[in-house]
Image 1: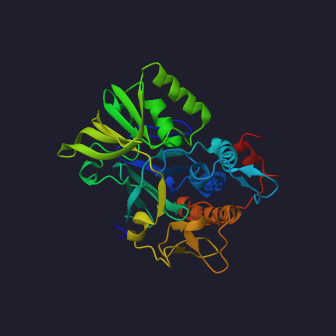
Image 2: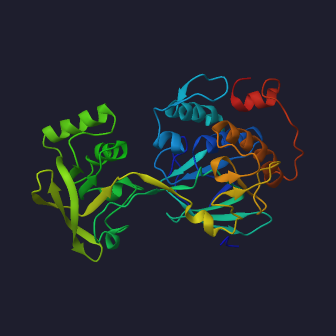
Image 3: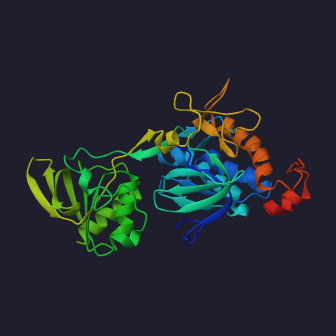
Length: 355
């Protein structure tokens, strides 16, 4: 129901309530471009994303997959597109809150929203923009019987604070970029780190794999080829995990924390509980403003629906531009909005640092 840190292309400290003009849910390409369009209108934005990196599907699912339908760019891959968008919005200094999921939105004004994340962070925002793609990415639970009591106590699907793993016997499970990246980042903090993967081949960047193998060779960490089949411990606190090797042999690894990285699946998530009208798990919007049935809450990108909707990044860019025009009404109700072109407006060029 719709109830009545961080990175600042850098960093922001935690506070009880974070005030912002607009809160954007989703830091994929459309959410990033929304920052640009809002910034041109002197509207500041914070972004929340469940992933631990900026870029949404482009960054997580196909960073190297070529994209051919971005206007004036014959070919670009997902990572390059996101990197370019991040560079484009630097003048507006957006704040990113990664590895967090928005759980509740409370309408407390006309409009003013109190938005809470699963990390306990609270935002006060004059408008909310949902740019969550097809929904929120949810981690896939590994097929380990009895894992549920350990989740969010000693089994974690995301790293919110690296220091929480300092001095731990840490078990990381997986063979992709997330598993290898966190292996390299957490190894210096952990008392002992063990990486488990079902085979001795990895889907991660070769440089990361080489660095991991060098740590194993030097005795700084352990690598086990196999699968976790059972967990041991009481009251949600891990003490050990059973590993079934590729040869069928069982071994035990002492651990008091585990990070499984088994990929992500797309789910609508808490959006369904925000009293926003839905049609087939999508959000209907006005094509003039891309506003939902709740004044002050907008939806852009693949999460929305309207007659003739095309699920293309370029469509999301168009939607973000029109959304910003209406958001200005809520953020700066005392100011008359004058449409300007970046090609001819000195004031816009000053904002972009190109005048």
